[in-house]
Image (cartoon, rainbow, N blue to C red; front, side, top):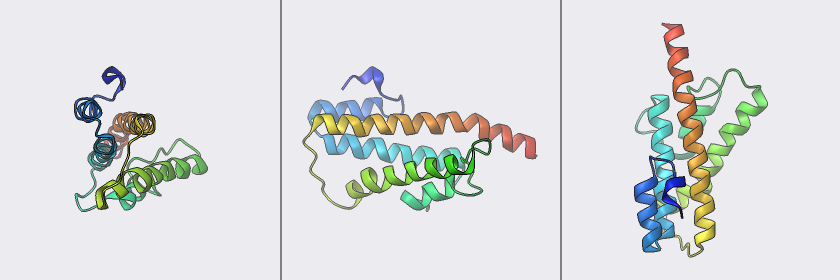
Length: 134
C-alpha cells in the first residue's frame, strides 16, 4: 500500500493499519471515513448512517445528487455508494470479519478513495447551489 496514493482523509490511519497487517481495520476505517464525509458534505443528521444515509445524500432531492447528470446516472451513483456501505462498511461495523488478503483490502480502500474524491467534487457544487438558492 503506497501511502501517497491514499486520499488525505484516510492516509495515515489506513496506511498504519496496513503496516500492522490489519486489513479489516484498514477497510473499516476507509469506509467509515466515506460515511462521515458524505454526512458532513451533505449537512445531514448524525443519526443517519449507512445505506440510508447514502439514499438521503444521493437520492431524489439529496444534497449530493448531481442535478446536471441524467436520472439514470444519478441513481447509479447513489447505488454505488449504497453498495459500498452495505458490502464493505456495514459488515465490519457489526461483526468480526476476517480479511487476510492485502490485494482485496487494497482494492476496497481504493474504492473508498474514489468515493471520497466524488464527495470532494460535490462540496463546491453544493455550496454554489446553496448560494444561488439564498
